[in-house]
Length: 410
Image (cartoon, rainbow, N blue to C red; front, side, top):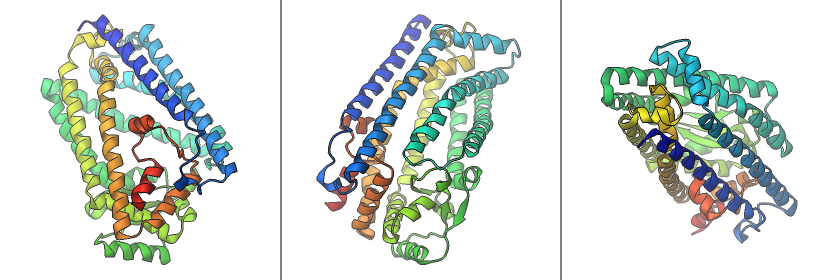
């Protein structure tokens, strides 16, 4: 396919995705005013429900603004030669392929983050603040951003340099070696993410001895789940929203509870949430997701290897001198429909896994405390109780609350 045709295809993909996402957001927003099902009628009183609707509307309108800005900037760069301008600027400094790619993507990521910064600030200190969720200070907010940028530069730069090196060394077969390194990296991060990355942003302390820890340990012993690492994370320093998650496997597995979760839920409700997380482990969801992530990355890298040396892809984004970094940018734009399809499959599987983990918690502990915990978390997070089915299908990694409760009561 010629570069001009590819250029128009990229434009069509960007506009079509924006149109589809905007339409789905509209469908979802139309249901904000619906009364929740009878099973959920006890979550909000009238005042709280009106507050939750207002929160959803604010996020909906702000999301439309953010998506429009993102599309407009991307289209402007494509149509008015932004990629060519940046490429020419970088070539005035160096001809080294690795350095050029690092500078090219570094500039794009930095520019994107700078554009997103005021919107993130508004989201945190206006919307989240207004509805009582934000607990972050401005100092913490900006330090988080700087640490995130630094982490992206180090890890992203190292991965990008590795990909180029393998491409230069192995030619079209580079994707096999990159895939192997990526698989090792994914396994390593799954094992040690909580030890290496989380401490950069949050404090984690072992759960103190007491009735809660004893209840958790008794449950874990009952279901044959060896659990020595139970940690509490200081999520309350950024938000009132609560969460819990499971990470690692083997001897490195650990459960992390947000301090907000401990404050918001009763003891049996916390154990029920933990039982759900144990269900993910017992049903092998962690390993399945890990395997699927590695396989999808291999597929993406293989397809990339078929197109990366095609100069038409570089020309399609307006760059006159074909290069790895220009081709990778064009490929990322062209690949997005496939990425959307794979995310649909992953979201579908994730929703099935959530049902299975709920069933495990119901069978090994109890359904009622899990139901009450889900209701409390939905209330505290001002969650959408009436999402549109099409929006759920496209975007939800968890089933809607009403479906989870009906499944637990079945």
